[in-house]
Image 1 (cartoon, rainbow, N blue to C red):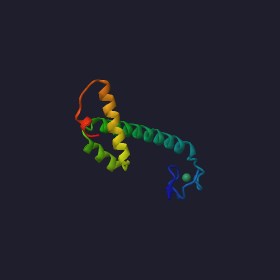
Image 2: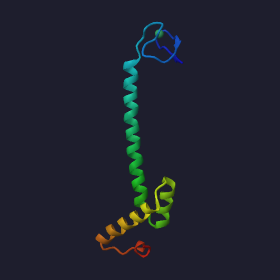
Image 3: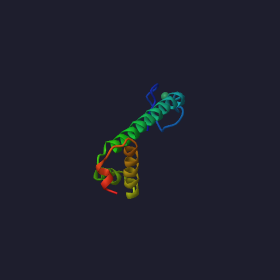
Image 4: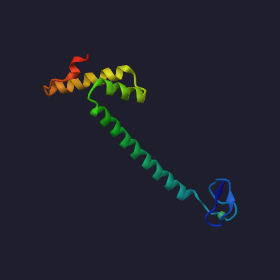
Length: 101
Ligand SMILES: [Zn+2]
């Protein structure tokens, strides 16, 4: 049930109040768009955090834990490690990860 802000009559959710004909549509659309924007922002932040979490992982065990939490396949872990070695290799850094594969 919805309560009309104008006449305070309770009615089923619909575009206009059946008692006083108060229109909701405009305000609700703006609110929905705002929420959609917020959701996109939250998703972006979560994406960044996920990437950072992977970036901070210093060993395969941590990567495996992330993979398990997120339901990734074991191949994802291998891909991550290979990518890491490739990147580190580019910087000519020796790493303990090298011994794992
Ligand atoms: Zn009303």
